[in-house]
Amino acid sequence: MLRRLRKWTLTSTAVLLMVAAATAADLPAAAASSATVDGSIAYQPIDGFGFSEHFGRAAIMNGSQGLSAQRQREILDLLLSRGSGAGLSILRLGIDSGIQPTDPGGPDATPRYVWDGYDKGQVWLAQQAKAYGVSRFYADAWTAPGYMKTNGTDANGGTLCGLADASCASGDWRRAYAGFLVQYARFYGQAGIGITDLGFTNEPDWTATYDSMRLTPAQAVEFTKVLGPVAGAAGYKVACCDSFGWTQQKSYSAAIEADATARGYVATHTGHTYASAVDGPLPTLKRTWMSEWSPNGTAWNENWDDGSGYDGFTVASAVHDALTRGNTSGYVYWYGASTGATRGLIQMDGDSYHVSKRLWALAGYSRFVRPGATRIAATTPDADLRLSAFRNTDGTLTVVALNAGTGAQQVSYSLRNTGITTGTATPYLTNGSSSMARQPAVAVNGGSLTATVPARSLVTYTLSRQESRCA
Image (cartoon, rainbow, N blue to C red; front, side):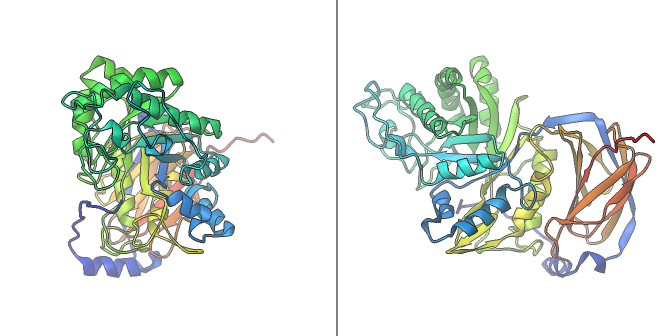
């Protein structure tokens, strides 16, 4: 979103610009580093990586501002194709008041829902995503309809009427709001899209001039106990609470975990990283998602590593931290494609578009780390080498190496308890001159391989067990 984000401090912009301009071959490798990937040490399961096209961006992608069918397909391929794009596997849908924009006559009145089957392009986009194999659809509300709130409008905060410290002359709208959310998900079901995760709040600790609603941690717990039984009976899992910052989300997660009833209803804890970055796990044993973020910036940026703080390298670093420091199971970027001075992955521009290296930074993880994977141990004494490793359900192994150093680094990887002792590792390189470019295969012998990670570069290795052959 166009808003306030934390800034990244870089100590030498001149050096970074020089490095970004250099190719991988220009920099000699430093002394070899060692790394260990150990399949016997398992961390979190992976649900996937995703994006959103809320606030009408899906309609723009669908051609409302001149984007042709050919360009639509190219953008969809970039976001969703596992062969040529990022292979994103989660679509976050934004719920607004559109399905019941006017008061039906009070919280106990029969709801008067309306449904156009399009939802500002999001239905079309969800159907396209499903055709690419996406099965995880997260529907999340920024606010309850204004007539259900203390301030009487969708925007500018306000609280759901009927919650503690939120009484209204119009009555208690808690159960009506729960029914509203479930009905939204049912409308998508009629369109062939199975909503898997349902959220009732977005940044409840931030008052925005657009759709927004304030909830304290205690109020979030209270409403969870209203929505939980209704959503569960309809087959939907509850997600909460999409706080403005990761540190801020901890208070919401802690409150939910402290309540035995609410704890049982929330399947996934979700937090953003605008106000604060991932600095550790959320206080829950349930799955957690970094459910929205894009870096701060004032102009469109396509660069990989320019010191701006909203380039591709910044995004790659943030994804790495979320996975390895926060133990997140899901990572949902904000806009996949938007317009103007966007920090989205793609900029739509009439019947044209432009691709940021941010897309390829995310793709370095999302294309080969698939839903159902498990993060396993990946360690190295090299402080500049940021490693993560994942075992996919099909038996393949994905190792991602992000070199934060200014020199190329030769790395000797020891593969322990992975089931892979011989074969090849296929590297995919992303840096200033390459975007998930396939590199020559590297031999795996005796459960080890040696490969070079260029300076300030992201390399994703995909490995599979070599089947033995009989003569």
